[in-house]
Length: 448
Ligand SMILES: Cc1ncc(COP(=O)(O)O)c(C=O)c1O
Image 1: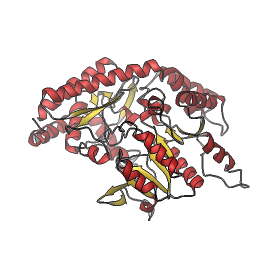
Image 2: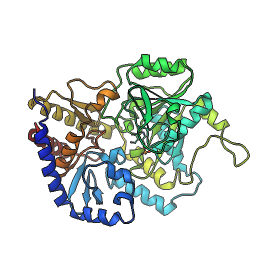
Image 3: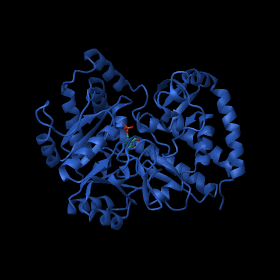
Image 4: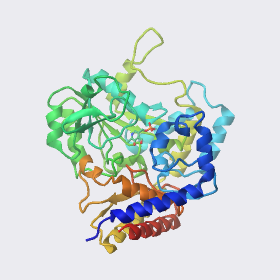
């Protein structure tokens, strides 16, 4: 069996970086200019840290592609980390947002289409009540607050390999048995508010739930932020049953997973939960997210709504939430793009992508597995698919991923960020997939 040849990998990486730098001189110039007014020369320093090459400055996007300021074209297999799953410049979304500007971007009062969005989601997912935010991070934050208020418990439980946004309650990891923040700036004692156990391990979960101090279990149905980890058959039903037994609430975060199947994995796998978080791609790049809840939770929130200064209630909302632009964008996405037929189409392309990668691995005698769920694929650098976050992290080989991203970028494919895998958006075509597979093959041959 073959393996990555580390010497070849670093030679390819250095050569591709030189090509990338030569192709992107206008981006580099803007970055230098940006450094005089923005940290690291970019609007949020996180953007800078995502790449091992200098940040691109973008001019525009169209369908599945975007163009940098040097005129280079990239087919986006990162899909803006699933924040633009409808594709760039989608005509339905464009029309809806233009109408939103025309009507008035926001009123801090509801528009009728907010009901259309919720009714549509309730019909798809079976989750009856909804509240809007501007980000999935914001939605998870409010869900955690509600769960703490209902259960009168403080702790939440997440799984190894989780990501639920840039929120103080979850930006922690467990290493060598100790829970600690993986970022700077969290409040002292943040680690006391969270438990972290391996995914697909019911005994480890039950041990923590038995303590009776967990307010909420928060997870993606399929972990999509540490490459890709699928639940074992029946696992999520058992998690919900355990939560019910120990008086803990259960939240499914489908900020990413909603793009994997019509009605999300909640519908596809008939999952039960107390909360369902959606966002990212639903807004087509316009900040938008929301969380759904059961009738019981909704009654509680109803009874604990803040009424001016007279009645304190659960901290929720913000002055720009549920604005016209994002609501109309979400309505257009749901009614005109996120149809069963379009999910079938993207899922078929996702299967071609995963099968094509697996064929490359097999033909090149690499003992690897192609990750696959719906439109998402990825590289598992092990002979067995990961069952939990720790196993999945073994495939986050930064040198391999950085070289791959550069190699692909220089040939017109914008590959996924390190924690993800290439994904098909609702705008990708069969030609896009063919191109990705042929460049990936060229890369693998160059480094093995
Ligand atoms: C599962 C999940 N939840 C929440 C978030 C946070 O989303 P946002 O950046 O919209 O706050 C992300 C972002 O990648 C995510 O993958």
